[in-house]
Image 1 (cartoon, one colour):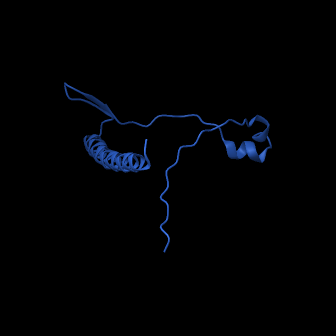
Image 2: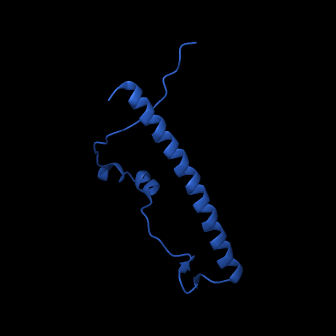
Image 3: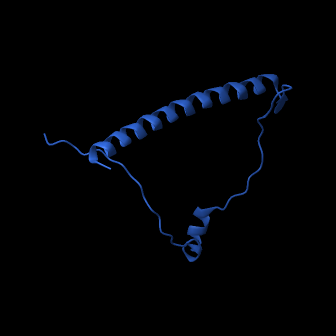
Length: 95
């Protein structure tokens, strides 16, 4: 693959990532509208006949890592792993 083709592919990738971000914003806006409708109706679920939508709170358990660090246990159970990074940056033109 030539450098020109790589540049073209990177530009295509960035355009797709921008489009994906735009679509995610639109999807979030629709989700917000649906949540607002459920709130307005004062229900946590709604069956439309074609779809069922849920919007409700629930309890979730998680590990308090700050407390584990305070008590010195965090590092005891910390494990290291290898991560492969893929990154694209722009080369700054000489001024």
